[in-house]
Image (cartoon, rainbow over all chains, first blue to last red; front, side, top):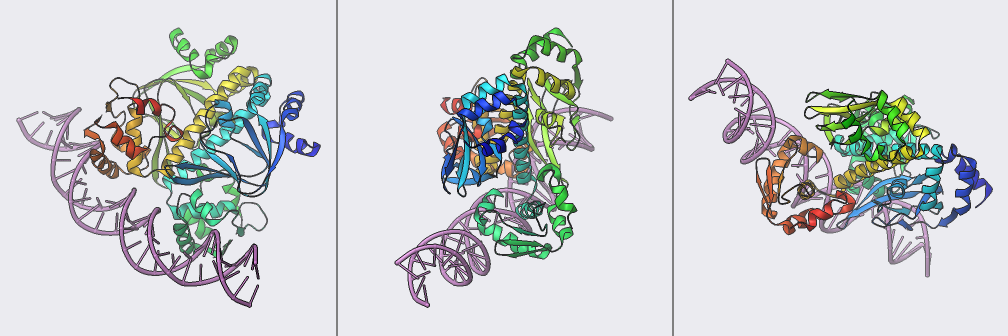
Length: 239
Length: 239
DNA sequence: CTTACTGCTTGATAAATATCAAGCGCTCTG
DNA sequence: CAGAGCGCTTGATATTTATCAAGCAGTAAG
């Protein structure tokens, strides 16, 4: 594992406040691996053996049941995933696959557990990480139960416009069928919802979405930090 | 706070493994309070000031948006809730109200945070608590996205039949309209789904549900520990 | 024993969403 | 460049779910 990778990891919320010896001991056992696109990293039902940290690329979390499948989320660098399964020592609830060529750091769960017991700051950071994941899924469930599909799409577009260069032009970061699944709808329904939003301040050309009238779009989405996350505030504020 | 209450709390997963001095110091500041039914304990959007532990009664977690409302879960004794908001020091994502007369222990979050830093075993227990909450909501989201309403109801009935006396007779623990909201449907839809399940091994009389043919019910629900939780295994196994 | 209330059910209807089947428009490859 | 493949769109249709409006049943109060 290279020095610059180590220092990138060190800056992660999960590792930032832990003691240096604990961090170094973890890094000695950890190893980095680069995976091609579309590779299944984790299969739901299996048991956790490594804590994963994504350093480069992107990973999709998805779940299947009875022949159906749905996207549960997308993980971007630099963040950890499946910490919960590591802590509980239970089966993964979700599968994970790379969306593109990705670099992943893998740390054996046994060593993570030892470090947690040894280093209270690390344990507290782990709690915060888990608490954030918890809240993400509470918000996801609220989104699904309280909004209809058009409202979810409008909120998604608004959310994507926070930060990142021109706030009025966004390029969809994933294929539309994956986005549809993430938002809990079919690709056909997404396509029609896109068209419907053209009457509410949005222009769509392929994978590029332009916000023409933020106020009108917000009227559909009714953005709410308690569903969309705190970042939505900057998205509403943007001109 | 009475001695027997303290020892009940002490047996909780969250407090079981922490050091006695840490526990005692928390208990000195904590206080118990009894609330009547239908009382709003927590309002979404507010900031956490107390960690809540329910000792007696039951509490419903719900969320609202844009005039709509939905039940997110029900908390039974003895367990904690809103730990995530305490850890993150952010606004509650959900509201909470008592369903019946309930006794709640309240511990100021500042003291909880101090104890977490001081006692690694407490921090690890907190992680496990949060990880379980996280997984509960992942499963809730999977349930909503992968199953239709009839399948969700069938799985719920199967789930309720685990343990607790006669496994073939269950009495709904909450009002039907609350159950409907929890399962992500309208009361009318729940009523019709109930009727539809009569053709799949279930008999319903008011609030009492009898499982006549577990195999046929399971064929609709397709129970899965990765959605319904590990307890579902005993529910399937029951005769 | 009524009466009123509240929550559940039922029926009719509407709206949202999914499914099925083409067709279109990329991009990649030979 | 031609053709194939893949994902997106579109239209027609079916299914699921929600809404609206009564009606019904159990419970509590007068």
